[in-house]
Amino acid sequence: MSHTLYRRSFLAFGSLFLGGGCSSLARPHLPQSITIDRYTLDKIRALTAIHQENCGSISRLAVMSEALLETPYLADRLIGSATRPEEFVVDLRGVDCLSFLEYVTALSQSSSLDGFLLALLHTRYSNEIISFPTRRNFFSDWAHAHPFLAQDITPSLSSKVVTVTKYLNQKADGSLYLPGISVKKRRISYLPSTALPSALPLLKTGDLIGIYSGLPGLDVSHTGFAIWRSGQLFFRNASSLKRNRCVVDTPLNEYVHGKIGLVVLRPSQHKSCFS
Image 1 (cartoon, rainbow, N blue to C red):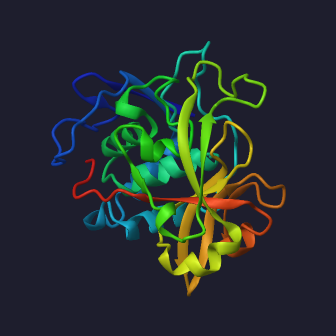
Image 2: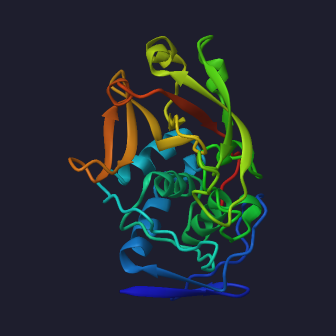
């Protein structure tokens, strides 16, 4: 069962009111109606009520990401393309590797349903404009598209970091992975997997991890969070592997075995929360 939330000067669902709030962050425009299923609605309300005093902190991000462990992996949940209008999708019944990052980030930075929707809009779309071209379709967009959500700390991790020029979205034959999205010339730095052991002490819980892709036109092939637990660094990710097909924790040093390397982004810290 789904419920449609209607937003004009306020967002009405039962007695929920979406005006005011104490956040100093700018409040972007949400769609007039947003359809959310009952499971997702209840999940958002429950999670945004947890540790509100730590809203926006990395410790809260760890709690939110842990709460989504075992969430089913489901690809292609977002709606929008060069030929189909973009829709503001909010659905925690299944996630892929990028939407997992989006939902966890938005949950960690909000203290209400209203705040979550605003935080998700801020996270998913450059300049809070809902459209397919302004969606952060590539991992490195988190550090390159306005507003910046994270800083690329990869170059600081090791003297062995490799930097290459990529033309994101352009395949080797010149065609596009995503028609309707312009090609982006971008310098991508990655830490070779063999250099990870010496760089491990520099990684922090909450860092965004991208598994570097050697394919033309792609920056990474998979994404997740760095999570320290009991002295070991885990890769918390929405796994598409047949043995998982859900959000899991995998030791990072095991996951990168046989991979070229990884890209590390550190989330920007927010002094205030979306409320």
